[in-house]
Length: 424
Image (cartoon, rainbow, N blue to C red):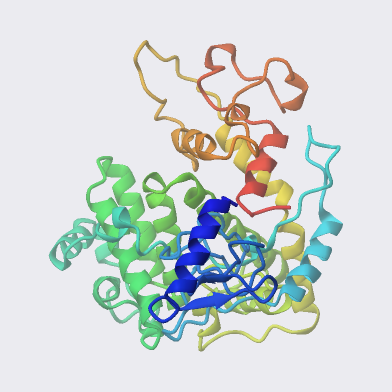
């Protein structure tokens, strides 16, 4: 504390009590500013930090921010009827204990205790509707209609009742959202934004085959129920928007996709290959109710009017299988292997990145994130190969890429996820 600043602050407040209301510290009685949440003199907390995240308790967010800069959770109160509620901390702790039974030490980091997902990983991912780069990119009704009519396969698709073309539902989702969320305006705002963005990226995609494949993938969702439609729209948004997102956002998007794969594996193994989307909805809700894990699309699953009845041994099997697959070690290794992809194409002088590599994480954005960290907490150079400690890595990095292409050891990959609040 700067004594002169504290003294001048105290004098100003004592001389102008009526025009500058104060909050008296219950511990040292210093008259703090009216909007203070912590005493300027003794550090006693007596109010809520407007920048504190309710999910991961990080206190350094801007008070006007919509999302936590560490875990991505919403900082704004939800008063729009959304079902995104806080998870009981006791339920999280209980599930973490169960996860620890399956946890294994990471190769190259055997001295540390096996990693387990932290509280932030349990929560559904807020869709980044306020991101200017994504929320302002959409297609017009006319452009969307032309795009759908371009492909005979899409134009011929019918809804699940086999009576109406999927085109009708795709266009209505673009302009109005999904009927399932008529009473949930914030969710439908997300649905419209994601649908518009996905169709925009498909409309402007330069690769004709890839454009067609993406269009068929999107249209196929509209042959199923609305729970599937929401899930596919969000998944495709996550996939296509990755290039626009910063590293932390890319990480939480990857986590969202990982949770979906864990749920899919559990459903397939417990219910069988004949499991329809309504069985998946039942498993989706069970994982949340029993474990406190929110897989994105939970609202749609909860509101599925044809949801199946999952109980008894089938429910226990789904829960046990999800716990087995929801493994922090596996997610850390997926992240590490994505970053450590080896460039098979020889670069010519002045050439940029090898665009033949398919990455979930932009290496330039990883580098920027590392550079922005407090150097006393994270060494930005640690994301590069360390010749002095080759045993720390799963494999050696090619010599011609060292020092300028990030390459992670398991220990550093885990440390990054810990700093993001995703794992212990």
